[in-house]
Image (cartoon, rainbow, N blue to C red; front, side, top):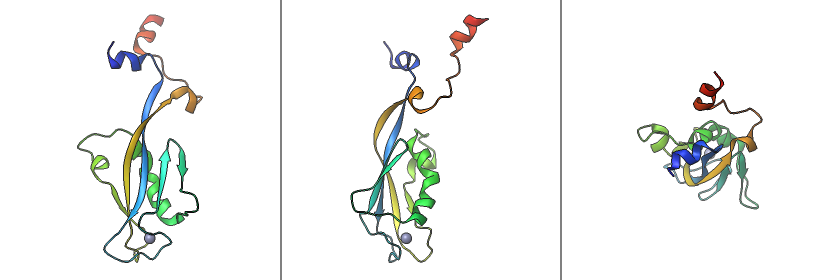
Length: 127
Ligand SMILES: [Zn+2]
């Protein structure tokens, strides 16, 4: 059985798990983050290592990009190739590197109450 026919019979989809890590930039860092600090994102859940904090200003700059980086993107899309985000503080040299660390399967029915639209075959059968 082909992979596509399996996925058509399921409400499964995949997202990438992400790890966002502070890497050194050319300038000194002035915010409360240091090289090696990181957080991870799996589905909608963000986690930090025990005892580590993460400042809200760079988090605010990163948040709009993360849902796109969680999803499969075209090979030619800059969202696929570009991984480094600068700290929004113009005096801070930090770079935040976003890496896709794995794929995780989710099920539509477990993450939303909005129903999936009927499949083409189902719609034809209703007419
Ligand atoms: Zn910074």
